[in-house]
Image (tube, rainbow, N blue to C red):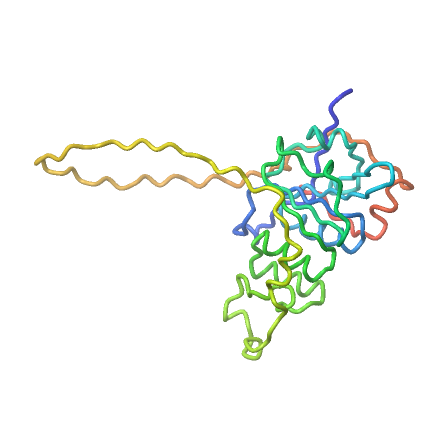
Amino acid sequence: MKKLIIGLVAGVMLASMATASRKDEVTLVMMPREDGVLRVGLDIANRYPTLLVSYKVLPNGVSLHGWNGQEWVNISLNDFHEGNFFRTGPDSALVVEQEGMTIPEIMIPPIGWCDAAYKITTTDTRPLLHLVGQYYDFKYKDWKWFSDNYKMSMEAINPEGLNVSWYHKRFGDHLKKGPVAADDLQYWVAIRHPEPVMVEMEVEVVAETNTVESAVQPEMELPEDPMVNPFTNDAPAAVVLGAGTAEEAAASTEKTPAAE
């Protein structure tokens, strides 16, 4: 059976977001097939390199679909485990669970192609935005955008004031109090952290001499490498769900334009 590769494209970094964290990382985001939750997933995918996968736990198995930037496409459970559904593998995974409904172990991204994995165990929009923003280290522009578009105060979704400086606030805003940030940590679970990278360093011992030290040469400045977009390659043909099969997955979800 041929390898099924779906170039899941949920969006690329906007020029204005060039300094945001995780801009050079691909994150696998797995969310239950609920309209409100998938809206959050699509909005995240429009701002960061993302492999967005929706799931539904069935009595006799699991249904997985990936967003390719235009439509939802089918992913078999076998292709998921083998990592045959992406063009560029993720650096980490963020799995969102419905509260009180733990996903089967078989749906946890394997360590073979995903080093780090974490869970958010609620689909309630406010703590979901709070924890997702913490995970991505949202900059002020991100917090402001989500606050405006989800009609929630900045204090509600960002109670710590992460990346919000004094000049971003009006005078009265300094006196506002949001929810207790620690309360949302009950919904955060670390499945596994990335393996630490061991770096061997060689130390050269130089004997002291009475010779005159040579002039210190200035360090040569190297040009910065341009950000590599992992989604620039055109995705090969994929198995596209029919309208009836994908109706539940994408009926109310606003479609996101594909990355150019």
